[in-house]
Structures are given as C-alpha cells and as structure tokens.
Length: 129
Image (cartoon, rainbow, N blue to C red; front, side, top):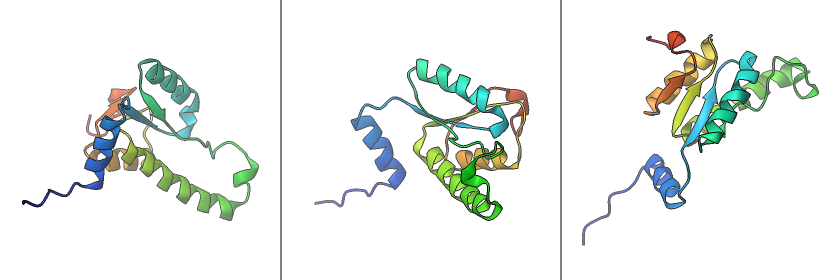
C-alpha cells in the first residue's frame, strides 16, 4: 500500500471549494478612499456570479470604534491580518482605483506570492505596468 500524498492547506481549500461547487471568490483590494468604487465593483462581480469579499471598514471616516488612537492602531493591525486572510480565501484579486499606496502594494505582492491572479480597474497603475 502506498502512502497517499499529503495535500497542502491551499490544495485542501481548493478541493473543498470544488466539492461544495462554490463560485469563484474575488477579493477587492484598494485604498479605502475608493469605497464607492469598491461597492460598484462588488455589484458587478456579484452579478457576474462571483462571491465577493472586500474591506469592511473605512478607518479614514470617523467612527467610535477607532476614535481612540491606541485602539485604532491595534484595530488596523487586526484588519490587515483579516484582509490577508480574505486574500488567502479568494481565487482572484481585483484592485480598485487609480492610486496604489503602500498597503495595497503589499496586498498585491502578497496575493502574487500565493499565485493569485490580480486584476486592476485601472491597469495603468499596476505595479510593473
């Protein structure tokens, strides 16, 4: 009897998605200054039959949850971790907006390091374009 080849967590996730007949999952990345454009991209991707995940907080807009600077910094770290988890879950990445800052650039690099396809609403701003 031969040993079955062990699957990586990524391969197990891909297999589970297939077994569950899940549609493609797209994660939206970009500066939170583009929240309106992200909502439009969400609408378009959803009507195209995809599951969409995107940033859920715009910390540039005032809110009691991040009004304390110390708590806000800790929350930003947690939200960055959460967004990287969304990237790991997704089948592809859609970068929204005509500006790419350091955080979005890091998300693109992370997605590419995982072999995720990355699309851009504004291809002219794509790193390496």
